[in-house]
Image (cartoon, rainbow, N blue to C red; front, top):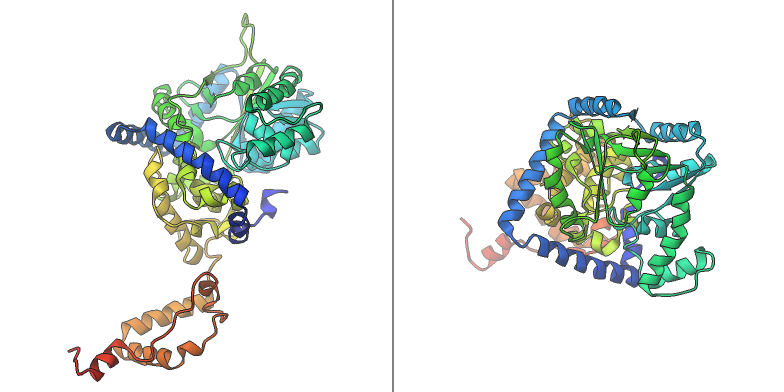
Length: 478
C-alpha cells in the first residue's frame, strides 16, 4: 500500500497490542536485555556526557551547512566515479532506482538493511515491475518471509520469538525441517541467501553516513550481508535521506562509538564499510558501478524550521525506542508508518503530515527517557509538545505539513470558556455552583466527557464548594 493512502490509528492498534500477551512478553524480554547492555557500555557518566555532546555537535554542524555539504558530497562522489541522483519524493526515488536497474538489465536484487527503502516501499515497487528484491539482513529476511514491515529500526523482527521464526522457516524455506535451535535457524537462512548473493544482478543498501569531504559512504553492520550486497554484485545502488551527510571524515569515529553502543550495547559493530568509488582498474572485487540516490521526501521542510530541524540529527540507533515505556509495550507495528517509537512520533508527522499521523505526538508520557538516552541530544519531548501545538494552532511561518488539522470549534470554545471562568471570580463562583447542582446529571457518554471517561472514572462534582463548607463551619476565607 502506498504511504499516501495510510492514516495512523495508534489508539486502536495499541489496544490490540496491549491485549496480546505473547507480543508484550517478546518485547519485554528483548528490551530488558538491550537496556542492560547499553547501560554497561556507558557506565562512565562523564565519558557518556562528553561523547554525546561531541556527537550532537557533529550532527548540528553538518545540519547547519546541509545545502552546501550536499553539493560538496555530490561533487566529491562524482569525482570518485559514484553517480549521484536527487529525488524530491519517494515516487521519484523509486523511479530512479527502477530506471538504473532496467538500464543495467537487472532482474535479481539483493538488499542490505535500509529504512529509507522501507520508507519508499521499494520492494513492492520493484516487484510490480518484474524485479525480485531479497532482503539479506537476517531480521529483514525473516519479516520479508512473513510479509510484514519492520517493527524496529535496528532489529526488524524483535517482535517475534524463536518458536514463531521456527514455524515461519519450516513453512517458507523449501526443505527446512522445524527446529527451535537458533544456530540451525541462522544456518538455514545463510544457506538460503548464499545463492542469492552469487546470482544478484545488483545490490541495494542504505547509508549510515555520507562524508562530504571525501565522498565516502559509510555502512555499519554485524552480519557481513551488507558487505556482500555492496561488493559482490556488479551494480551497487545506495539510497539515503539527505540528512545523513557529515562534513569531514574525522566526524565519523565519535558517531561510530555512539551508535552501536546505544543500539545494541556493542562497543563497535562487526563490519564498518567505507565505499568511496566503484571498482578501479586492477582491483579484484567491488561493483563496476555505484549510484547514490539522495531522498528529500519532506526533509527540506523539516530543515526549514529552526526547532524541528533537530529531528534530522537522528543517527537511527533506536535507543529512544528501547527505553520508551509506550513503544516497549505496544511494538512498532502500532505506529503504522516506517519509523516507530519516539523518533517516529516526531519524524512521521512531519514527513506524512499531522492530518495523517497527528495522533502519534500524543502517544507519549513525556517522561523524557528518550531524551536522556539519545546519543545526539535530540530534545524529543520538546518537539512532541511543539507538534501537538502545531496540530491545533499552526505557526504562521512553520509550514508543518497538516498543521491545524486538529482544530476543533467545540474545543476552542471550551478553552475560551475555561479562560473566562478562571479569569473572573464572579463567573467562577456561578459556574462552580451550577456544576455542583447539575454536573452529576451529565452522563459519562456525553461528547465533552467521552474520551476522558473511556479510561477514567467520571468526576463527581461536590454539591457545595470549599468556601461554602467553610462558611457553614464559621470560618472566613478573608
